[in-house]
Figure: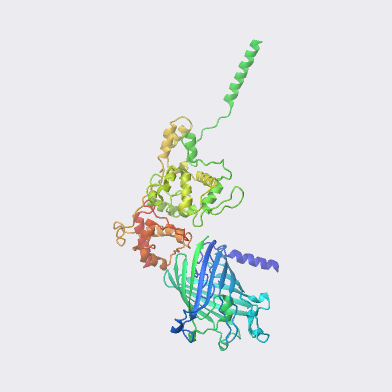
Length: 297
Length: 343
């Protein structure tokens, strides 16, 4: 059995370089679409400094002119760096505020330190129809432990009974195809595990994401993504909603700048997949942006 | 007794003479097609200033090739050296094979056809093939770009290599053993006799000179006349009227495609040496067309003739094309191709 597994691993890893140089380049322009990861990895020895921001509700009860369409609030902010070890393997480290919240319940983790990595297993070429990338991340909360009364302890996760409760994890299989220079499509089976959750919530969540990119000129592209948790608990009846985003991407040499609208308040997978409780239809979407600047080291 | 001494001495001298006459002598070099020109010069007693210094520890042609092609090599202590440049390697801008059909002229169109036939890129820098045989570097208008930095490099290939390492490739200075290794590699890719296109009688004259039966200085002069001692470099401006183009030349899109494929795509395809990606999609051609006649950093006229500058945080830049590396006609050909593909 071990031999079969090892052989499979060797074969899959070998596939990455098997089919020459005529591979699909830039299925997506950035390592992230909007909320979701993309199949892209950084080129070897390249560092990407990233800043992402999600403002408050654009419209609805908490948006509109009184909050200048949400610009007065910062739901989540992330700053981080990613580095390409090889053309197919990259790692990243990010600090984000954290924005997840359970409807009418406690908030998710805050003060998040996230370590992520990606490995491109397979690359689309003339012979291979798709690109496959494995992605994983671990998030650690450095939030101060909250002292709680015995009665409400189960519903507040920041009391961190154990150190491991500060962690949440996410793994994804990113599968994408660049159909033409104008159109790319990606699906994202994903599993998220939070070590500690509120009462009645679930630790493990399977989800499926879909993402696309439509190039409209050399510089501009439209991106969109959506993530759907497979859960009886995460339904609109319980005020959970799929995280849906749409954005405009601008690329100049070395820079990718994206302006987007999404109902997800949080930025990291460990945060937005379990905790998206904002509804597009109620105006609970927000302006966001991502700036990416690459440096060759 | 005295007679015996004399006899012994005569016999000794005679024996020494016989031995000296029978010692194997070095056969004169017979130049063939694959003979390195530098070796012929050495045999002819001509000055060969570019001979690598193998006395330094770690010097080898293999190390030099690694530096030229990969930007790094293995140091004498056995460790992999740091990359010479984060942005470029020598072959980003220079071929390492012959790229001119006639070594006595610098004709960009003849070169374009020649490199196309050999599957080589068409680049801003002069090929490193035969560099060891050239005697002047950073010629012509390169002084406009590098100022006094070109002075020591003009007549010294080692200084030229170092200038290229620091300024052109925006990297670290090469250590002495690295430069000598590059020299050792250059020695191996120096011109060969077959490159010079000698006639039979010229070849015979050279071999006669090598055998000591002819004028060695004349033979060396003949060989030097068969190639350029340096690459001319004329910096030229974009056309005064960018819409009208150069001298109302009519572009040939077929030739422009060759320039695009072998020149633009060498660096920009999949962001190989540049952050600015180009491909064969409409998006790329429409973008280039839109900017072609403008006064922007995305104008092909602008960046080809003036290049771009290295900036803090973005040290990789685009070197300009001199007139000898991209003619006005080729520029118009490229424009015609881009406009055709964009429509």
